Length: 224
Image (cartoon, rainbow, N blue to C red; front, side, top):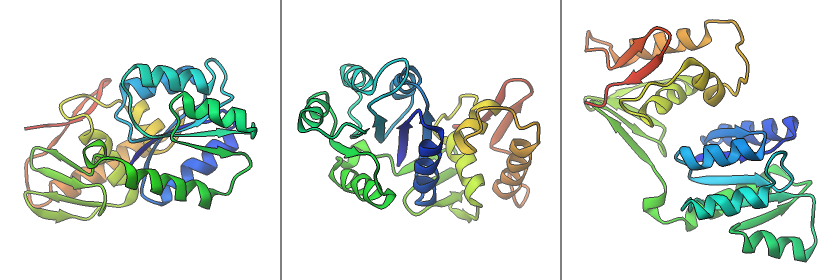
């Protein structure tokens, strides 16, 4: 699933994001309520994990605005406030579950899985197709022209970002943030290196390159 984690504590955000990624989820991280609202309204999100006490816009406001914007992805509210009244307020704002800090990651993961099972099948994207390339998000499998393409986890994530935006350019900065969770330029060729490896595997056998690069703009996968 594609999960938005809105948490202003860097260590907690990284801990949750790493754990979810290890279980095969695609994670976007927001450190402010404003960023969380923007990502929730502009990206395809399957589930939201939302801290109540966010800078900028608080979690309650973010959730209410997401619901007003017709974002129906299940939401888990994280909070240090454990009173019954606080939980009721969060549920009334549109949360589907409520978890009090500190929490064990195992419990959070169990709640994520429970909400995934409850979600309607059409609400959860499990397969992506762009031209000759097909990606199964549940099985973590990729095929081109019906033939399997074996990718490493980071290569899979890079391709997933491109396939979620077929025909659109995905910038180097976007890939650094979404695949590596870098919110700065590491001054390395990490994106270019992974893109080169991904291309080699997708185009093995002299097949036409399905990834287009425009210098200074970004990368995109040809939808047709």
